[in-house]
Image (tube, rainbow, N blue to C red; front, side, top):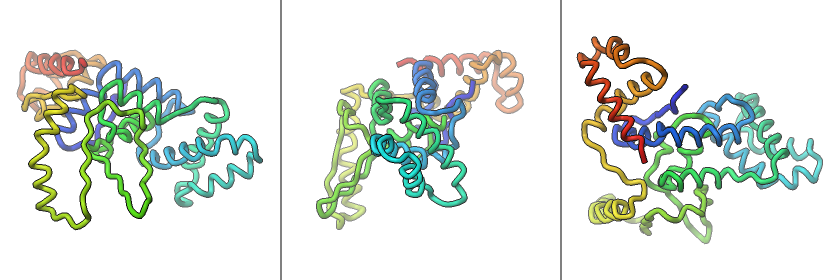
Length: 267
């Protein structure tokens, strides 16, 4: 079994992500939603996610019109709008075909709603919506998607469209309204004066908040590698034999590290 890839360098963020995406129940949900939203059993390359998602939204908005009007004319127009460049035509065309079939064969599809359910079930901040969505479609978590903020710009009566499901309302949320003339120092002061209040609110609500030991965070990538080797059938002794020259650690140490990793996967 292939684990969800984590392209996150920072060890603290990597720890948060790893102990979520390696949970057996989370993996089951990702597999279930992936089979629902992908026409094939093969996940998409990460770089194709934005094309897939933008196509999905357009298909959803235009579904009734597509079914009513000339299929060929409507789909040709839709393709022209979402194809980024000629180089990606083939990849994008395959994505479009899959989504066309998906929407024609299903009356009640709500991708944002499905992702919102995952966010709620696992108490994931709604700012990480895209991270969960990419995990379902591409089996990978990208660093930029696992975000701790959501920037919404409002100007002259226009409001940027949010892709975060509106039903995700149970998490503690903090919004700061600023002037474009705010200085870096002033913004830093706002952060310094309020960050502990924000953290305490998350602790009090227990909304997805966990603390981890420093050695757990510093060794997260190594321990995850051992955990998945063991999960896929490699014994502690074999892992130790392969890693002995690299780590100089005993097989007992490796076994305890793997067991500790498993404990952190419980909710």
